[in-house]
Image (cartoon, rainbow, N blue to C red; front, side):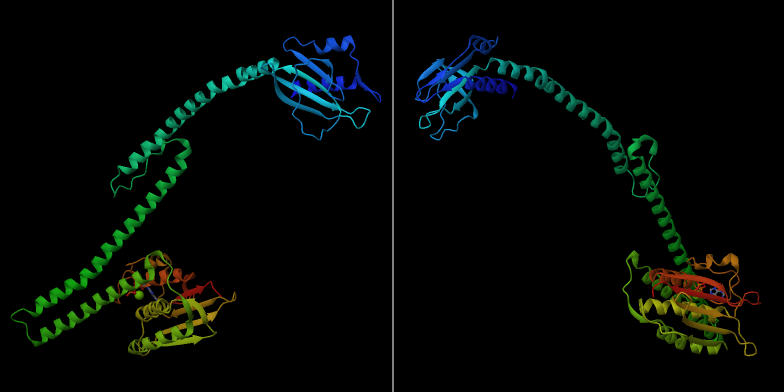
Length: 430
Ligand SMILES: Nc1ncnc2c1ncn2[C@@H]1O[C@H](COP(=O)(O)OP(=O)(O)OP(=O)(O)O)[C@@H](O)[C@H]1O
Ligand SMILES: [Mg+2]
């Protein structure tokens, strides 16, 4: 603090004036120095010099003594607060070492009243603290107003969202929200749009599924009515029963395919996987399909060109995938005893060492324009004779996705007529 520094400076100057010889300690105080000491306008300045035996040498006798302990450190400037005749003062003092070494040191003290200091303190309070008292509440008020104003549109937005009907998927109005939250609103709108699309897809799926089931059930009902006619003979009855059998097979097939798709989708959670042997699974399916292939005079074969054990997958789903691909090939490949169709399943590793499941046939293939659409649920190529629900390839695609595999569709013999269809499922995992 600058005032302490000035006070200390004076104490040191006075300490310089203490002289001693072997017997006495003297203090010579020239007049100019005396005047400098009293040059302060605002404060009273006191000084005091005590000799080696504590005797009063010069200055003001009323100044209190320092409360230092026995071991007096000499020639070191010290400061303290004290009181002189009830008036608080600030004191700078030095114990001055004197010649007779056994004697006590002399004491030089300079003190001043605290007028200047309190004036300064008042100035500081007036100049700095008071404005703070005004500015701070004002700032708080302004911030509060600004926040309230800024949050208001958010509150309105919240109200609007709360008041929505559960089926209202219309986008939120982006123009009435603050610019800072408009990206948030736009991403909510994006989500609403996707939700709307997904709900629409599900509704369509449900309608298609209901339709697919309704047709064979209506057939069942009609055949039952026919059989119950009074004039129906044994042949008619047989015919109706035959039709009823077919219709119920179709209905069962559709239900089974719906269940398979539901299993494959498994509501977004990843399916349980284990190490599977893709060749062994494919082989099992091929064996199951042999009777049907023989009925149709189709040459069904299986090529196994690699060790496929260790593929991480769900065996039930993988078999479902192979079954759908092979059944399609058998269903849609025309075959006669004279011109037998050829269906081949293969498991091999491609040039990039990825495991590939391939099912190809010698049938009509799938026209370029239909190649995307055949993977949609319930989509069937027009003019297809074989029965089916249109879910097989949707199931295959879903299972391929669940296994991180890529599904592609090509021609078995490009340029030939018929070109044949070739499905490849490429597993990205090693
Ligand atoms: N190997 C193939 N050769 C020619 N066309 C095919 C072949 N595989 C599928 N398709 C065509 O793609 C359509 C969709 O096949 P998908 O397996 O999804 O349904 P589906 O066979 O009609 O019914 P599901 O498999 O559910 O019994 C079929 O209707 C058929 O027209
Ligand atoms: Mg199919």
